[in-house]
Every structure is written in structure tokens, then in C-alpha cells.
Image (cartoon, each protein chain N blue to C red):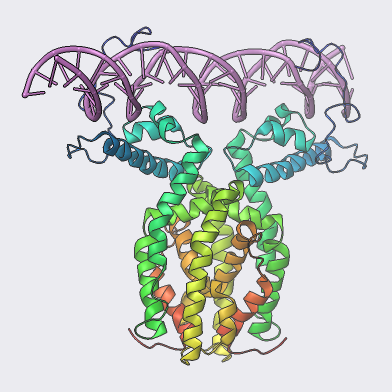
Length: 233
Length: 233
DNA sequence: TGACAATGACTGACTAGTCAGTCATAATTT
DNA sequence: AAATTATGACTGACTAGTCAGTCATTGTCA
């Protein structure tokens, strides 16, 4: 429709000419990386990163694999060397992106200082690493597409939600045992402790424009609610 | 692929034969309704209802207008007599579906009994009318598609979020003035009061299968948190 | 070490299918 | 009969997924 008839003739190779990845360089653009497997892994990573952006921006159905490929500086066919189909890419993507989230979400079960301090630290980390970043959009993406991808909802529940809530419940129990937390019933609904943090994530991506939200301040007030009036700054 | 070659020949008309609207009857299937405008309005309503189901089930991009038409017991062209395009249908749909939500969300600013009782009633209504119903899925749909449809996010913020939060803030202030609520800072973040209810909505549609949630019990514990230990049953 | 062969990662034009939106035709109402 | 409203076959734009072909890299042998 535009280029050569059907014969690729002399197709230029490697980075320099090529399709120019104007959107995102294929990661180790500078590193030489002679090893083949390493290059392949690099491309895979680039594809996943590009797909994350596209899926977040457009949602699963509307995301175009052509765009993912362009963004990753890769031909469309390459995507299919690494992933069975669009759906597999999506699921893998969520898995990949969530792993680092898990690490963040698992603070020491037995806090060093007060439980309140531990939760405050947790809240701070959460705001910094999730609510403010693209990871937050990922959470929204899961909420959005979850019902259509049970596998993803399952995975997310198993790996993030149930674990996170278990840790939270542990912290609450410690808080109750130490007399920091008044309401024993709270341990039955750790969701209550996490709820405002989730709201912050959603708020950021939907309403920040209309009414900016000081998430950390909100979470502090919420902690005041749980632990009683102010304690540390 | 199944019917007549390409010539409509003798195309049967009206309800009886037709595509049989097995999914959803066009509303007043029995009522005579001679008036034309009324019939049109009825169809419009049927289209909106069908579209709500489809958009909730598949999301905006993946929803097919053919399916919407079939579900509404209407030909595809008819949709275009009422809506400019798919997007207009979607936006109108959200508007239409949200109006009744607003009514629900506006309890008396000055509660008759205690503020706690008012909030408990509110929570109960919310669980009954939103978290448990398709309206809850609508909320999820808005969260999902909001970023791609600023007009919808705007509308939702204006009509539901800001109003709802204003009412909530009013209640909180009353609670503070009456000494029911200890923490004055709570009035700055009415989101905190609503957060668990939102979580309940999301939980229901994502994780109910894995771990059923007694939303009302959770909201009661949350109220205990706000008002201090138990008060009324 | 240098030449040559084998490999398989990568490419992108192409196919097959989908679906939003159109419009000539038909039904219904006035 | 004219005007209005509804229909659904059709079109054209678009995209997931394929595959024959290319060539940088790796392995092998003299």
C-alpha cells in the first residue's frame, strides 16, 4: 500500500535505520549485549512494558498490538514469539507487574515500633509506590478488566489481596494485643484499614483534575480514627 | 448464511416472528400504547437498558451494538435514530442510570435520629440498592472507562461524587456538633466514611467468588470505628 | 584462527474476520 | 396517499493473528 510491492528487497537491519522506535527505546539501547538470549529477554521486557502502557491507556479491548509493537520497537510478529495471543500477553503482563507490588505490600509482620508507625510507613510507601505511579493505574486496570478475565482476578486475589489482607490482619491483632487498637472487631475486616488507600488510587486517576486529594493527609486522619487522636507527626 | 439469499423477499414484520427478543422484552410488551411518542420513548428506554447490560458485561470497546439491538428487541438502525453514535449512547446511558442513584444518595441533611442511625440507614440502602445490584457494576464501569471518557468522569464527579461527599460532610459536621463524632478532622475527608462502601462494591464484583463479604457487617464495624463501640443493633 | 553452515529471532505483508455506521426499502401512522 | 419511523443487509475501516522469508549470531571444522 505504500512501500515496495511485495519483495522486501534490501531490508535494513538492526537499530539505527529500522522503524525508529520513537516512542520508547528497546531498553538497553546503549548496552552492547552480544548474547542472543539476553537480547530476546530484553525485547520481551520491552514488549511487556509497552503493553502495560497501551493497556492502561486504552483498556484491553481497545489496545492495538500494532501500537504495542511500535512502542516496543519491535515487529508485530515478534510479540507472537513470546506470547500466545493478546490475552496471554495481558495476563502475563499483570503477573509481571504485580510481583514488585507484592514485595512492597509485605512489611514485617511484627513491627519494630508501634503498629501505628508501621501502618503510617505502609501508607507512605503505598502512596509513593502505588497511588502516584503507573502501578496505581494497573490496579484500576485490574478492577476494570477483572470480571472479564477471571484468571487475572484469581491471580490478583491470591497474590495481592489475600496476602495483603492477611498481613494487615496480623498487624491489627498485634495492635489489639498491645492495646493500641480499641476495636477488636476490626480484625475481621482488614479491608476497612485499606479502603481509603484504594479510594486514593481511584481518586487520583479519575478526579484528581477536579479536586486534588492529599492522600497522605487523608490516610493520617484515617489512622487517627483507628488509633485514636494524633500520636506521631 | 442461514436465511434468504440476499433479497429480503417477504420480510416478516413486528414482534411475533422477527428475531424474537429472547433476552429482554421491549418493556411494555403488553400495554397497547397507541401514542407514537410514547412508543419511541419506550424503545429508547429499552435500548438504554440493553446497552447498560452489554456495556457492563463487556466494557465499552468490546460491547457490540448488534447485541444491544437484539437485546432491546430492535433493529440496529433504530439505535441510530436515538443516539448519534456508540459513544453518545454510552454517555447518555451513564447519565440516565445515575439519576436514580442521586436520589438514593441524598438522605436528609439534618437527620431525624442520631447521625449514626442516619449513616446506618444510608449504608443499608447503599448495600441494597447499589452494592448488590447492577448499579454497582455501573460504578465499576465508570471507574473502568472514566479515564477514557472525561465527559463521563466529569459528569459523575459533579452529579454523584461531589454531591454525595457534600452531604456526607454535612452529616459529619452535625455529628461533630452533637458530640457523636470525636475526630473533627474527619469532615475534611468524607471519603473515609464512604471508602468501605466503595470497597464493598468492588469486592462484590471481583472477589465475591473467592471470599464472600458480609458488607453490612463490615460497614457496621466501620461505623463503630467512627462513633465509638457499638450503640444500636 | 578464519571460513562456512546451521540456527532461530525477527520481520511485515497478508488473511480472515469483526463491527460501527449507512441507507434503500418497508411498515406504520396520520 | 404522504409522512414518519423502523429495519437489516451492506460497506468500509480496522485489527488479531499467520507465515514465508531474511540475516545476525552461534557453532563447527580445517
